[in-house]
Image (cartoon, rainbow, N blue to C red; front, side, top):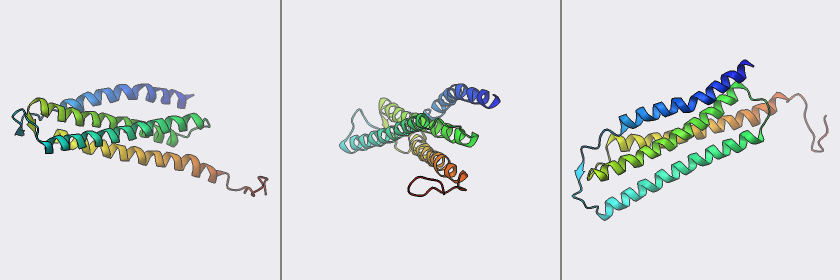
Length: 173
């Protein structure tokens, strides 16, 4: 009973906590759009291509994070057995890190947009560099947590019943 109550608090409190953290990150990360190379209202072809590549990479990372969320949701639906605390923590970490990855992708594109609106270009500004880095780092973290979850559910679970081996015909030995 207590385990279910704790899980309920975690499930209901995590989105609220994330929302607060996201607001703080946005205020901190997007405060550097005052400096950079002035564009004079024009984007040359190189800058257009660089921004297009940034957009495509951000979309790829965001789509990958959404795919991870979908795979975990499907995996949770298919595996209705008893969950250990470690498995629950892994599943929560996968979902949270995937959502955070999507958020940093959003920040990355907002930083690019803010610079274009300010008529500047600074590819090395902290808002762009750190948003990009944190997007792919949290995506990799999400993949790692998912691998650990699958390993725990699929391989450690099968070892717990290792005392009885099953022949090819399906009967017990």
